[in-house]
Image (cartoon, rainbow, N blue to C red; front, side):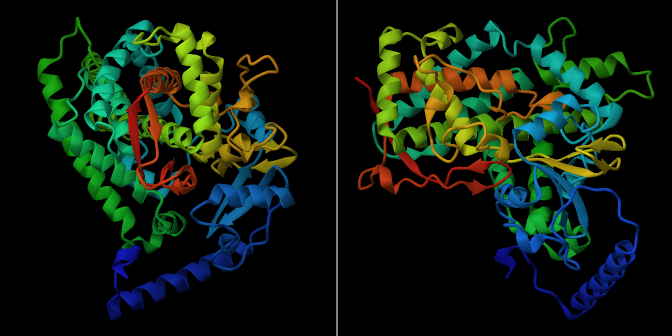
Length: 499
């Protein structure tokens, strides 16, 4: 039982659990008698479970899409005792996050993320603390070269180490997870000022902890904790996550302390440097948001989320090229035509590689990497004729945007033609929102786009990727494993030099 995320209960614990259930029933009966707000329509809730009987807890995004077929693009669901408004489809999500950006800008206190960050940091904070921290983070990352030629040079340097790693396997099978190293190191360079050797014990530990946390975030029992936090005493995954996150914090605290002792105000090499320098500048400001707790939370946010998305997308890129070898060959032929052999790609090559660029975008669309990150209303809001009160959880479904039948010709198929016109020119689609949009869009969007293009092009310029011996393309599994992101299942690949 414990392996499933539950602890065995003693008689006293069982009695306590029953007491909690009784209290929950009384609470439900109390709120059910309140006058109904003019919320969007939705399926009628059952006692205690709300609409959970209609939702695949592992793939809530797909369940929301199904419910939207009956209740429309804006509807209400009951997740246990909690109400949430779901936005489904490109038009509703765009209208909310762009046209009504100020109304849908806050984050709800999702129990696991609140336990981790206590409302601090750059991703799960709200209000003035979020605005100040985000502005500072965006400014600092730009100063450090994010989206500029300086960062392109660092990526090409890191690419050298990734290529050597792939070569070291000498055509033998190796794990797709091996591709996490390079994107993770790019993020660490921004955060800490230096890259790690792939064999460095701290680097290996951080990679392991990030991986374990991201997997646990997809546990059904973790979702159960988020729906019924008062049952947390009896559940395990959130406790395991908190322990592993604390291990990451221990490493980060040591680094932050070491940086405090060596910081050079005339040469800020990293995001941590910039945070600590700003803290020194505001030493006498009692209202400053740059206190130790928020500094640690902000670095932790970028370590966890900033390393996961690009690294996982790169894994998907290799897996899908193995799955569709004819598309891989077409990518390689285009690269061979445009780039001289051994010539490192640059961002200037993007316009000359429309098919490769289309494939990279289609990978992100097809895998729907980040199904949704919840928002909450910052003020009382009227939307689509409904009233959504301040503080209401709102779920903008990015999966429903990236698979919207009104926006994509073949939404459920891997089809790079979604991003090509009749003449083979690359065309960006408005409904391409893997990084979300509006005021809460991904901080590292420009960084991720640079990494994916440079790493993808050079990898396929140098190698052909194939299933391991004894396997064929049909054996490859492209069904995602839900975690914090939609991850590919643990699989291996073989890389042979491309001639």
